[in-house]
Amino acid sequence: MIQFILNNQVIKTTANAGITLLDFIREHQQLKGTKIGCREGDCGACTVLIGEQKNGSLSYQSITSCISPLGNTNGKHIVTVEGINLPKELNTVQKAMADNYATQCGFCTPGFVVSMTGYALDSKQTTSCNDAISGNICRCTGYKSIEKAGFEIEQKLQQKDKNLQIDWLIKEGFIPNYFETIPEKLAQIQPKVFEKTGIKVANGTDIYVQHADKMAEEDVHLLTDKNALKEISFTEGVCTLGANTTVTEIAESKQLQTLFPKLKQFLKLVSSEQIRNMGTIGGNFVNASPIGDMSIFFLALNSMVTIQKEDGNTRQIPFQEFHQDYKKYDLHEGEILQSIQFKVPQAEDFFNFEKVSKRTHLDIASVNSAGRITLKNNTITDAHFSLGGVAAIPKYLSNTNAFLIGKTINSETIKEAETILQSEISPISDVRGTADYKRLLARQLFFAHFLELFPNQVELKKLIAQ
Image (tube, rainbow, N blue to C red; front, top):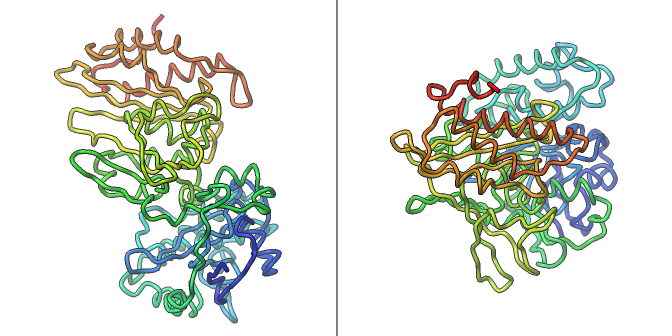
């Protein structure tokens, strides 16, 4: 029996673990404030908060419930818009929205309010309130009024007592007082131990977009709470990330931020706040999309993947060999991705990530690219470039990389390498652009890596000169 807390109520249910959390909330619990919008995780109308114990304290994140399996609530606290209402007045976030005229038809408003409340509950608050609503879409207001509400909330939260966070938020009217009882209630419930049978699902951000109705009727083998698959570790110059590590967890890792100073800037290009909170790197890899952002990122780090067999033994292969053909990859029956490893960048290593899509944020790439170069005395001693959207699989540019080794950084070298790059790719025309357009983007993004990393050695005019 699945057990969790929904707002202030302990839930014990025999419902199929594979149904969406959204459908359980609306149809089983009749809480209609969580809206059905796109059912693809794009619009944010179905946003809820999920709270779980981490490092001795209760941590909350926003997620899109339309593509989240019910089973992933097991042992956690789920908060809908009804769960943040105060008895006789608007809470602080709701009042900020009303005072700034930040709602019109009201359909999207619950999602915005929940996301903003999630921001208030975030003890770190390393982003802005308006970043927290990056996955919420409004079709009425034009956003400026919503942004003003966000700025007002940020100002109020500057006074927050982080040592007594829940008490302060209750006192200031952000959340109702039952929140202070949740840790004790969570400690008393007994979460179900799931069978290791059925379709393997982590957080469902891809499979539930395509097959939510099917998953509602299937047995699911839930992977999201396998802590052994979530660890980020550093040993003997190698970084290992468990396959269940989310994009948010990568972005918030202080060690990874040190290694990649622009890490947050890079990862802000990857989907929305809610999806980054859910999406795992293993899920991105086995989605096997030719434009998977995290696949492109880790290909350029010359990574290795560890695959766990059904009997617990493991095997390891270069990540560039994992994707074999369109939507095909090297996983045998009963195997799961365990982790991905890469050598920690040193002072002579340079890394960059680029992405072009129809929208700057919250969109699937037309073409994305990453590159890692090792440089000694202006000579390239190692090179690893990758491109997405230009082949049937995320493309590791073997020939281009081999050509660059031993060369010096200058415009002529880069132009010659780009010629080789064009011979390695085979883009097709689709809804994200024509084949010619994607070839142009591949060229521009390849150049962009060098312009970003070596601005004093590369001139744009020389690169684009015919």
